Amino acid sequence: MAASFKKVSVILFPLFFISLFKSSRAAGNGVYWGQNGNEGSLADACNTNNYKFVNIAFLSTFGNGQNPTLNLAGHCDPASNGCTNFSKDIQTCQSKGIKVLLSIGGGTGSYSLYSSYDASQLANYLWNNFLGGTSSSRPLGDAVLDGIDFDIEAGDGQYWDELAKALDGFSSQKKVYLSAAPQCPYPDAHLDSAIKTGLFDYVWVQFYNNPQCQYSSGNTNNLVDAWNQWTSSQAKQVFLGVPANDAAAPSGGFIPSDVLISQVLPAIKGSAKYGGVMIWDRFNDGQSGYSNTIKGINHGQSGSCKVNGLVINIYFEGRLQHSISPV
Image (cartoon, rainbow, N blue to C red; front, top):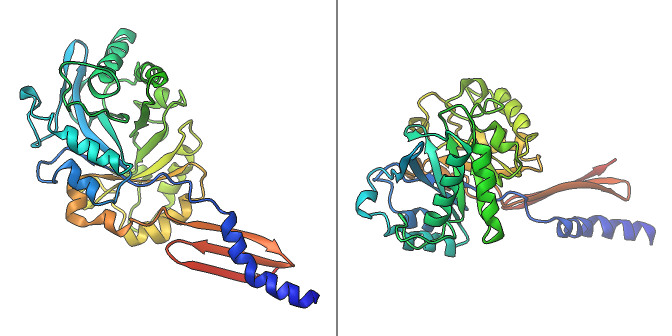
């Protein structure tokens, strides 16, 4: 009877064990959209069902008395209110459960914060013109975005923490998700004080165009070392920021999808803060199909335990596997 029970338990336990696991903590993959007029519409991007986050890039002019201005490349002309037609696209994305954020800053542009007052004024502008507030001149129409992404690559890093606190203050009325896109060298030169507030829901670290902490020629060590530093930060979730192809990162860091799946993700997904992969950008992703090849990476369950003197290992990602061996 004891032997029979042990045999049955060994057979059935993997199924019971799977039932104990919750879905992956990963939030999902994301993409930046808006910097190439040939990348298709925002709705097109969301209708691929490849992303859980889309950052609209960029609000590239603001601060120091400047009128905040969108730059969506060839998509629309904000000066003539030509970007309001994206309201319906934003709502289409959100109806699919996709979070849509406005990315401020970018690699080029005229932006800065010169004082606490500057930060407060920008927060009020973002709330009233893109988030849950009201304004007669909302650049993207009536759609209410889910949050603000900080892609800050210029200036001395001052007052971004105050902007984050001011935006978070509006969450008492409607949740404002905050995200950031720091460079992979830790800590980031521009966003360190902001990230230390602990207010950022998502931090998609740019592991490209930074030779000291990116994947290169089969070597993942520098990337993994930097990743471990970022997961020790106050970010709630950390994402692996990657280019969609070589063209998207002139200074390197492209990770072929097979390498990402077989070498990089196994080294970083164990972190409780792993959130997913953020892709730069939609145009290049459309060219390479990168997001298609990694679409299922965050849907999985895994674990191991001991029962009746045996070790049972289970890994489930698109298919079920299990191994049973003596302790």
